[in-house]
Length: 178
Ligand code: 5GP
Image (cartoon, rainbow, N blue to C red; front, top):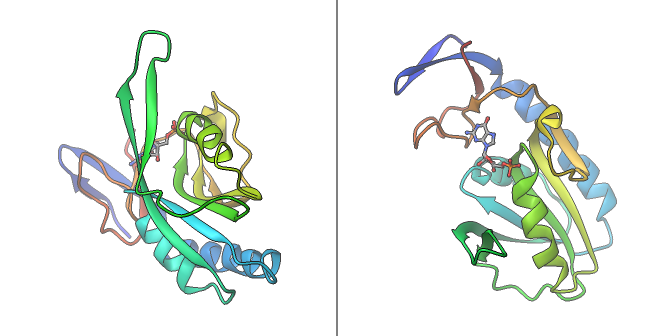
């Protein structure tokens, strides 16, 4: 891996495709064990998680389902501030064991706002699998159950993550040059 340029910025190699696949395999192994006799519903949050979700899902040997949702943020009333709505969450959640697939948890704001909406639909359990977690950037604590890498508070791209639309197709993860 070498330095790459995306738009006006330079990015340095951070996580190789091999390192990522090793972690994905470990997470899949843990999920296969933890959900052996269950039929979990995976909810992948688009756009960034599509590559992680695909690689992870391929390695699951349990009986399972997946759906893809998009979280849209819009300005609510003055009292509610920003409101997040889930687009595409058509599945019946009641009584299901749900596993959320995220690309990256940064401040935790997204999940902090989305999780209460999910719990409102009465799932039996909810766990979170995220490839990346910037734990030092936490503002809204989120309990991550399956983690790929805890990374520093630096902007990263690749493996599904973009910089202004570009970079999602890069198989490794790159960090913005200082
Ligand atoms: P949070 O709500 O936890 O602060 O942020 C979650 C979302 O912010 C992620 O799903 C992702 O879309 C975006 N994000 C946070 N950090 C990064 C980063 O380093 N690179 C990219 N490409 N997106 C990020």
